[in-house]
Image 1 (cartoon, rainbow, N blue to C red):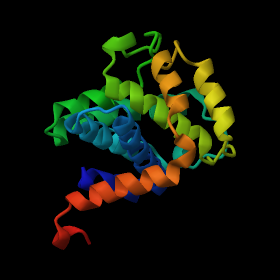
Image 2: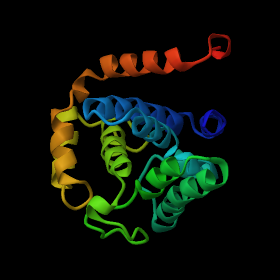
Image 3: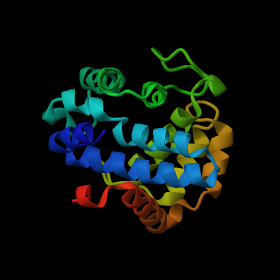
Image 4: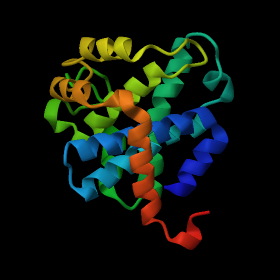
Length: 201
């Protein structure tokens, strides 16, 4: 996971930072939902690496300051599939691979290429899809300014039942996402405590 994350950061520091924010928030939310530690850790790693397929996207697309055309959009969609393929070759944990593979799936099953729908989509995938959309909306992008937390929340509710699990959207609305610094600090400290001290540099 560390090697893949470093490769992603070398390709696109912006995408890697997004993955780290999503992983920290996903971990905090998983703890809030009292998920088992093993499931929480799989969600953390999957969230961190859900966009690793971006390594294969040309820089011109990643840095384009305007909307993508249909061919460019197709390349980004292919990168989503490549994330799962990369992890299939490099990751020993099937739970992590499964979460990443289904993050792009829509709750109502209407997204082409993703046959699962509703609660058949892994819980980790449904969590990460909400958080990654929230982070993307509330972070300044090359092609648009960041949305407010309130506006991003409205957009999540608009897509509840179609793109996102409506029950989880309601739970996320009650999750203290506005206190992200505290959540990130708590999760970071938990991660750091698990490292071998001599390896922490």
